[in-house]
Length: 298
Image (cartoon, rainbow, N blue to C red; front, side):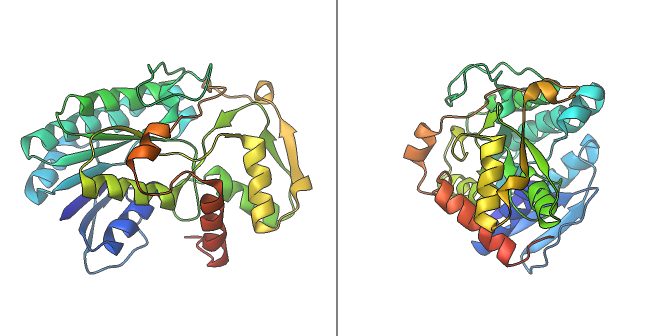
């Protein structure tokens, strides 16, 4: 089986690439600004600007993968709000093109989406809950969902606050670890709730969906907690001084983009479908501890 992964230099893309290779598949990994720190006989790394839709179409048409895992997007929430044309060009246009290409070449597509498609007023959103994004990042990711929903067979994987060690943008866990290692204090919100998701467990779940050709919307997330609760859990897991973690509130933040107050996702349906344990805190934080012990600071 040939698997094409966009955004393979991001943390979720990197982990999914590793997981696909581990399972013996041929992987075509797309990246642009950042390198992919993996070498493997079954891996081909291709540098491409996915906003060049002609080049993207030519590549997919020539490769003809069995599976497309679309993880590339403009993930900076603030930048999406400040530069909406850029967010549309990077996130929406390639998604529409890849959905069309999946249809034309009978490719099974998996689209990585986000909890930010919801407004965060109540939390605990189910897979069939009505989206209502409050910022432009959530909006463009939702438009991407709509593009893939036009296909008879597709999988949409929503996730939340992806964390772990590896390449890509600095996630909250990596930021915490770097600060706490230096003995520096760090502020964490007590009144914003998400469902933090360990990237390696996300990759395992995605590959199960691929192998079983499961279709529909899946919430692959960890357990609900505030940013502060998450920070304390990271500190305790890795043996840092949790007294360095200071309480903060959303009203103290000077964001350009609005944030959902409680975008936690309910994953009971997905838990019942998948065999992968992507959700338990025990496994997630144990995995983070293993990554830290191995020095996975790629």
